[in-house]
Amino acid sequence: MRTHSPHQRAGHCGSGALRDLLEYHRLDFGDDPLSEGMVFGLAGGLGFFFAEFPGIAPPFYLVGRTGDLERDIAEHIDAKLEVRETDDPQEGWRWVREEIDAGRPTMVWADIAELEYLRVRMSNTRHDIVVVDYDEDRGVAWIADNDRDEIQACSLRALAAARNSSGFPGPNRHATFVYDWPTRLPAPDVVLRRALARSVSNMRASTVSVGDLPGGTGLDGVRRFALSYPAWPEKFGEGLEQALAGLRIFIVKAGTAGAMFRSLHADFLREMHEMIRAPALGTAAAIYDELAEAWRTLGRHAAQGEHAAGIPIVEDIHRMEASGVEAMDALLMEALL
Image (cartoon, rainbow, N blue to C red; front, side, top):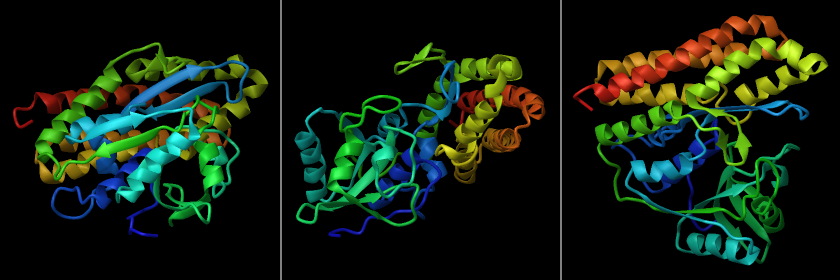
């Protein structure tokens, strides 16, 4: 490969890809490269979405991050971003090729079901990967993917198919994220305020759909999930075991860093507390640590098919999700921020 592109295995594709890119461009707060949790938090990635879809397997969709993480981070750290989309595969590849030729590894969306180095059958067209180099004569590109420790070789044919997929949750149309990175990050207190305001907005706002998927967002989505869960035995009947298996995947396995993204947000708050000694930062970090463990516990009950044992955990989650948002609100009210 023509350039050395830093890469670490990560808990989530978006924050992992952005972490790699920020390290490549030497954007940090003056010490070591940023952690994945710090990057997730700087993006204001915290969110929630829940929707029921009777008749499919599993019969619901659950996610703990906002759909705009990759876009919002640019605004928070004074970067510029152009998200390009096209139905023309040649144009889509030209965008990536030109960026790499200019020495800029480039993040794109790719369907995990089409990436030959992954062993998955489910579709996710919004999977963030970083293309770090290519060799058209050999028909290969090199990919930084959060799910692998090392840079992966991928055929240009498979990469093109992954970037032009109509799988779940919708077409990705060769989406290419062209960032114009700043020379340095804003001061920690400045970017913290921006990121916290975004996270609170993500959780306070209530919409009836995300993209083309109807459901509940933010704390309203949490409320809907908390109301729905106890009724699953009657609602899903013989499909309860499959629903619980799906719940475990959404909580633990679906690129969530193992705890519905809450552990990443806790890491962000804790690391910020080390730089900015605002007492409410420590309080908020502790809440999200506890919340992350509650989600892990629910995932363990789901893995064992223990629906009833999960009911009080869901009640705790409902309460703590609201407490976490209140703690971030308290941070924004502090004069220091």
